[in-house]
Amino acid sequence: MWQELGIEPTVDPAAIRRAYAARLKAIDADLDPGAFRTLRGAFESAIARAARPLPHPMPRVSAEGDAKPEKEPRTEPLLISAIPHHERTLEEAESESARVREQVRRDTAAQKFEAAASHLVSASARGLLPLSDEEEVAAEVMTGVMADPKLPPERFREIAKQLHWDGPVRWDSTPHDTLRQQVRERLEAEVWYAEIVEQAARHNPDFNLRDRIWGNPWHAEKTAAMMLLGKAPIWRARFYKRWLQPMVIQYDRHQPWLKDRIDPAHVDWLRNATRPSRPAQKKTSNRRLVWLIIFIVVILRLVASALLGQ
Image 1 (spheres, rainbow, N blue to C red):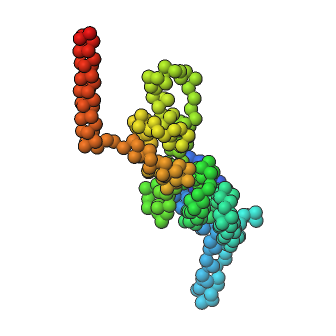
Image 2 (cartoon, rainbow, N blue to C red; image 1 turned 30 degrees about the vertical axis):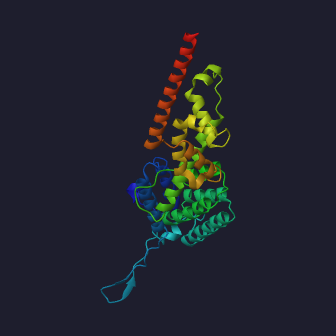
């Protein structure tokens, strides 16, 4: 415990908190969650030990048979009394922890998610919440965030980042793995939607009429993105099949989070328009092409015969 914090055993909570803050700066909780949990566990154990009083000394029986209590050492009174007056007692810490949890839950119920996340992060930095309670309260905040479909994407990403829920699902199993996976999927959907919007809004000053006639991959991606967002005529979807098909596949993956912004019926039409041709349809198309060529050849021969006959 003390080796993890990097200090000698002490009963001063202020020294423990300073050591915890110093070690915390050297750890990336997203890249190494195991080290963070170990450090946080050592911190909580040290704080709990600093707030725990020593047992009273047992009476010592002298040679004459009288029970004489041993003197309490002056330098080691009850550990809780060694805490400076400006520090919290164990009861005060538990009370403040309860107040923090209540405040975060009130903010979440009122849909003040940024305020709830700020209170939780501040309480975590000051060591007011045990690690298990911190995870539980953060899950309550993210549950409220996920239940609000009207929350702007920027606010959602900021809250997830603030609570460290924007990384991959952690390797160690927790009761909130399902919720973390849902948050991760929504974040991926928001990132993909932002890319599509950016593609549709891009402007290339070098784009000219020649590129429009002969085709340009940059313009094709832009047009396909505009079709997906409903900002371009969709009757030309067959000509942009190569770019629309991957977008439709990605939309199917992110549909639960984007159906309010991209109409699923609109995407179904694009899916049918860009669907790969079946073998039977391709065979029929080839037959029609052959008959068309034969018809053109016959017409040309008739025209040639008429001209030669004159």
